[in-house]
Image (cartoon, rainbow, N blue to C red; front, side, top):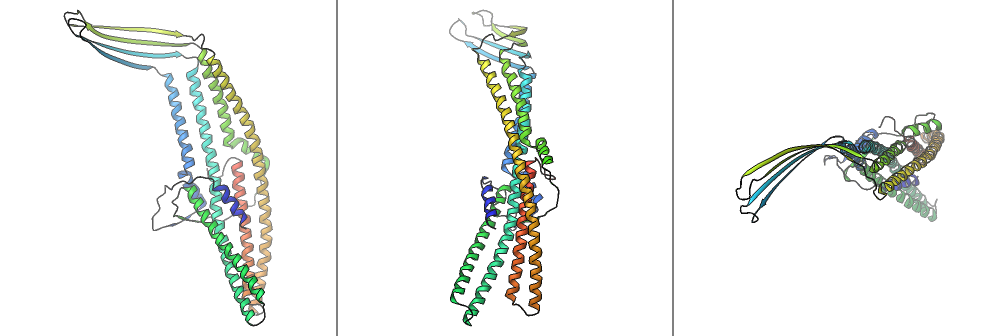
Length: 433
């Protein structure tokens, strides 16, 4: 019963600690959260999601930066010079220049740069969606692990109390000569083992609490009480449908599809290095100067220059050729990455599908055990009423029934986690995002 918690806690604790943003009243150190509420808090405050959201915002600004190449540029240049000691009179000169330039053609680099950044925005959005999927799955494991450790701690507490009563019962029998010293030693050893298990379960509960607080960016002193119970709704799960949904909805597929388009646009951007460029320009010049070097009087020369400039780089030492070949390699890498990702997704969906089916079988098996121990408890209570067994015997039957209930909750836990894992593998959580 302890191995499953250790496994999930170990797999989740790799997530770095994130300090809390939510301010909780100091007098209220406990908060009750449903799973949906926990997810809402996590999606709002989780640092990994916030970082990816900033990458999306930056990608939007990169598009605006690229679109700037479609508009003309306007530049003003002003200068003032003072000449002393050269002429009989010291003179000053003022120059002003206004330049308006509009590119008419740049080898397609501007349009392709806009496309490139647009596809990069789609890549960043897919990475954000992927982070949300992975984080929600981490939420589910942490939340339901905390819920199960609560039950596990209570079960161990009941076992501990029962073990103490057994020890007292054996001591009483020993005084009456009905039990040996060895029986007492065995009971004491059993009690020591149960005490260790109880303390271990409390530590696991504390670790699960700290992990969930970490994921939700809550203060470390806040104690979360899970309000959502384990549920199981029999539903037919089809691998083929799950696979098709994964191919359509997995963010990784969208990520690589957009990355391939971006790489193609990047090839065209680099090809523009060997293509001509054309721009139209208008320059206004205003200049003041001295009329003579003996009389310091002013005169202004104002004039305009209009023109169209055509430029074609004939040879650049094969720099553009090397850049294009690098961009082609990036495209091939993205295509290979997409193929590998599809293969990984197929394996992921298959694994999570089989795990989900196994968890359903475990639930069915646990239900049979519950029926048996429930009937056994009813029989023990009837015998206790008739005076045929002791209260300790009845407590043993109650404890066995409690263990069977916990085993069912563990099976339900395995099912819930397997269901969330299958939803993650197929690309989405229905009703969450």
